Every structure is written in structure tokens, then in C-alpha cells.
Image 1 (cartoon, rainbow, N blue to C red):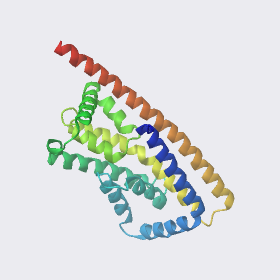
Image 2 (tube, rainbow, N blue to C red):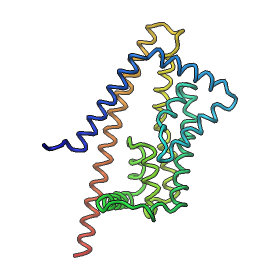
Image 3 (spheres, one colour):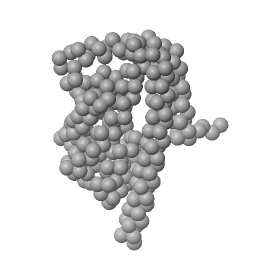
Length: 245
């Protein structure tokens, strides 16, 4: 029996995970949102709470630490939109720079062992980024690749991505997570018991439409980025073959 491809399995896992989390959220929404509301008020009342919420995305930007998306969303839940964008954006950028420093100062690439096929793919993508320049680097940053993975991958591209290019692209791309701050602010409105049910319904519909639009935009960006990378990989392979001949 032939197993489904990795892409199909990933889609199935993603759909199952999304369905399960949606079901749990709908079933236990009131209890979850009330607990989150109490925790948010506690952090918001802290003197240096906003500094703490900037440190969280910075730390979780460094692979293999998890929780980056949650830490960014919490900024919107606690401080709302657009105030929550400040610690989320600064923390994302600082964490990206910290990853660059840790990876390159530790010379991770020199002792990182990849399989032959993965090594070839890594070198091909690195060459494509080097050939296309900063535009391709920025496109990779903006597309919906997990922040920790893009931090790690671009930090490893020592021959094609300079410190200046990496830092500038990270600074620009760190603003893309403001939409997650907005989602967090919408969740905060849903958890507010003082608002009437009509406002809750409008907020829920607005958030659902916004997420659907953003998902479509990110999917288009991801496909466009992969197509560009594949084009440059093919051109690079042809040039290498012609040079050998």
C-alpha cells in the first residue's frame, strides 16, 4: 500500500490539528478566555510587564525554542492593538539578531551534518538567494516560513547573506507579525464580559474574515517565494553545467 506524500500528510495533519484546536476552543471558550484575561491583567499591572512581553518573543525567536507565535499573540491580548505591536516587533527583531550572532559566532555550519540530498538543497537555495540578491532575501523573510526557521536558515547562509542584509531584512519582516498582535487584541475583546453579545459576534466574524484573508495572502506569498527560488535554482544548475562543459 502506497503511503501519501509528505505534502499530503502535512495538509492532513494541519487540518486535523486546526479542527481539534477549534473544537476545544469553542467548547471551553469561556473558561479559557477568562483564565487568559486574569493572567493578562496581572501582567499588565506589573511595572515592567511590557519589557517582559518584549523579551518573550526575543527568546522564542531562537531555535529550537518554541512559543514564538503565542508570545506575539499575547502582546495583542494584553496591550491591544497597536500598543502591543511595540514589544512584539522589537522582540522579534532582537531575537532574530541574537540568532545570527549565536549561529555565526559558534560556527554552527562547520559541524552541522546534513544528508547529501538536504545538503544539495541547502546549497541550491543559498545560491539562489545569492544570485537574486536582497529582493529574494526579503521575500523569504516575508513569506510564512516560521520565524525561528528563517532565522536559522539565513544565519547559516554565511557566503551569500551579509550581516547588513540579514539585519535589514529582519527589521522589515518583523513588522509582519503585527497581524498576530491584532488577532490577540480581538481575542481580548471576546473575553471581555462587559461587552454585549452583539459586539462579541461582530468581533468573531471580523476576526474570521481577517484570518481568512491573511491566510490567502500568506499562501500566495509562500507559493511565489518557492517559485522564485526554484527558478533561480534551475538557472544556477544550468550555469554550473555549462561551466563544466
